[in-house]
Image (cartoon, rainbow over all chains, first blue to last red; front, side, top):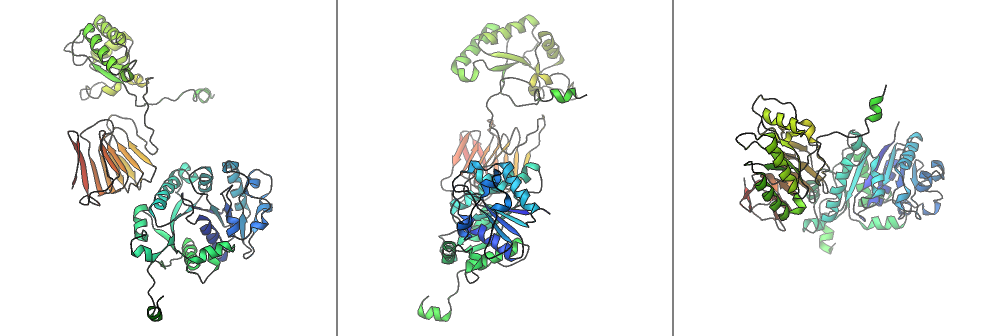
Length: 271
Length: 255
């Protein structure tokens, strides 16, 4: 039984990769899967903050890659979910500290430990860190914001996924590509300030897996070290739940993509 | 037992595309040939000085004798070029090449080969040293061969990718993203959106055309004549169009 490897990537920085990695990993764990989430952003580690385990990092990903610690020692158990583990990045090293063989060894080790899913949180860019994060992937979640530069960078990443991954090099079935639109603001889409779901799908030529609405809850959750998917009251949290369900093969309609209709009271008193 | 294994890494043998100029001799006059070539070398030394050239004798009424051919080859040499072989002609040319110890260059063979004619000889000649810098495409796999169909690329061409159809047409069934490039020595047919760049007739074929079913290009070019689109004209955006060259002018019209 090998673990399914999901890379969360985007090309562009600041679009929500780490937020997405944390929520997808947590969501998969909530669905009963055994999940590890790895921060590939060596030198600029953030995932531990979003997952709320920054004070429990003893050994990190680079230590395991270099054989300075075992996988067991480095995996940090999530405080809310027993079947969710975090493998933090090193903050003091740079991305050259990762090697392809080392990453493969870690991923194989996780498969042996009986993990169902490994979520790889890719750094921004298309250099070594991002390359290694995507290289062994079975699935890719490409995070994109509804604006042109993000869409173009995602297009570049989709091209790399189709050519610079192990599956591509070995001529196996290609990496499954999913698009996740984050920071979506239906009101701004309606007045033409943002690209719509349809625009993005058309430009990139693939369907979206989910649309995460722009929401203040995301920032609050991040600052508190809680993946936003745990906050079931927030729209973003619900949208991530839908996304995880779709990733597991369930069919769910897209929500939060239209401007919310104001209720009677809101119309009277202003909303 | 594995003698072959031990030597197999000694070299790669393949048919590459190398830039060889062809000197088509119109009259057997070594002095005139030398003068003319010298003039060309002086005009473009970067291009022609010590350039590999092939001597094409097929436009002469009668094949000159060995002495005359020797004089012609010497004329090429003294002009500053390096004759590396003879262009394929009749079986007499073949015999002549054998006597001179020169290879026959197969690339030029097809044009002169009578139907059902001999297909022997010539192949070793392709291993020429003087390869010009070739654009290394990321996504193309051109197979050598004299009769080539179009190259087909299924699916999208993503930003940063480049598809090159060498010595043939290119058909893309998919969209070409902003920042992606499709190039062909022949025509280009795109059954999808063109948001990136398309360059047809990359080796200078001015008759090459580009056909697009959904036009939003950044740039189109034919035989080096290009147009960039900072703003796509309203009447062309999203339309099926074709692009062709009329003289120096690159024209685009709805289909």
